[in-house]
Amino acid sequence: MHEQTIIVTGAGSGIGRATALAFAAPGATLVLAGRRREPLEATAAQARAAGAMALARSVDLEDGDAAAALGEWSLGEFGQVDVLVNCAGHSTRVRSIRYVDAQEFASVFRVNVEGVYRLTQSLLESWVAREQGTVITVASTAALDPNLLGGIAYGAAKAAEAALMRGLNNELRRFGIRACTIIPGEVNTAVLDKRPSPPDHAAREAMMQPEDVAAAIVLCARMPGRTLIEQIVMRPTRPRDTSAESAAAAQIR
Picture 1 (cartoon, rainbow, N blue to C red):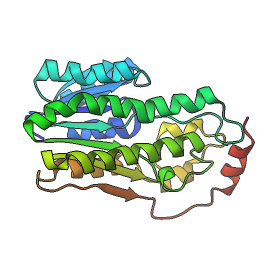
Picture 2: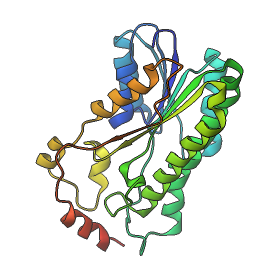
Picture 3: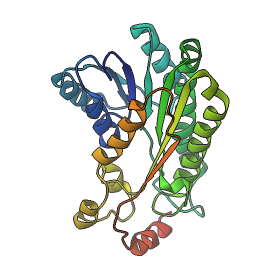
Picture 4: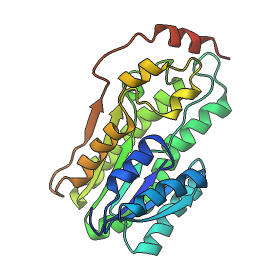
């Protein structure tokens, strides 16, 4: 990724952090975005130690205007953005469609759909002019099979995210623009701590790790411009029984 400018959202932890570090190399410029500055600065410091130029930007991606401003700032600061990686996202505390309230539901859509759409859109005209650009969005297998583990709002939002990427390809591939969707199953990140019944240590060890998903993201970005990887579905090799966790999630109001 020498001499490329890459935006990674959600870069303070989990998949976003692993992705930022996977891209960190001499000559790369990384714009690391998320809400909490302290973990972003920690990721940026590690990326700089690997030889990249890395800047942390504290942005609330639930605010569509702020998401768009991040893209505009990056273009103004560096002249171009080559790759955008959308990793930021969250779910609701209440997972069941029976009980989740409208405010929580809307919050999930603002981050996972509106934030992705506004940030991506802010870069598109520059990509059309250059006839190249890559956006990689991390969705979830909840988009394929919405369930209580992720929550109804999260599953619906991730499905919308994936549809957004498909639509972008259908419209803009002719300009050399690529939209890639990564669809991972369970990944051992801090997001699991917010589940009504978090999985135990043994379960987490058997899951995919953030570095596994980051490797798929880097694969998409490094493909020659003539090649588009539209979608990658990833799951832990060994399935596990999640019935007790799902039952716990069904009861949260």
